Image (cartoon, rainbow, N blue to C red; front, side, top):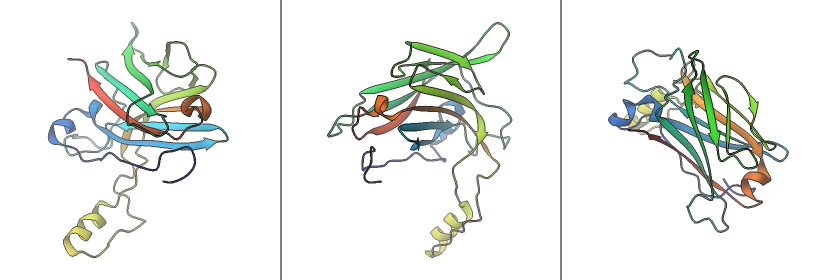
Amino acid sequence: MRGGWWASTVLASDHDESPKVKLDAAQDITDLYVFESGPGKTTIIVCWAGFNDSIKQQPTKAGVYDAKALYAIHVDNDNPADGKADKVIYWRYGANAADEIGIQWEGIPGADPKVAGNVETIFDAGPYARVWTGHADDPFFFDAGGYLATLDTGVLSFKSENDFLAGLNVTAAAIEIDTDALTGGKPIQVWATASRLK
């Protein structure tokens, strides 16, 4: 990716992780998407708990909202980029006395220190952002059969109509935010992390 407000280097996660990560769906980040979603708007989506061979039931029937998991979006907007986060947006999950699941966001530019709402709803998070989290169809496209055939034969065998992940689910969190509030007018690098309270 070159030009615009994003940095020129792109790194990606993987749907098939190490055996230890696979056993903890709440920590298994599958994808990170960062894109312009309208004039002056940037959307960041983080997905986890996607398909892997340690999850017995596919597609999954509900989102994975682990109260002991802490997620973070890290944004480096130095120019030149130094690979260190200048902004960090955190979120975590919890349940109330009625066992309703909610999400709490922290560190959203311009918002109160902590902003909370229900899962599966879109709500404003300060004057510059709106957020959503929930159970969703996996947006990543992958022809697993074509990939394996390519490895076996050395002949490129991907087919655009073969999406191995079609109809499978992830849990996701999304934030749409004013680009200037996120970037300060500079190119950005973005990465996501998941950690666990022991």
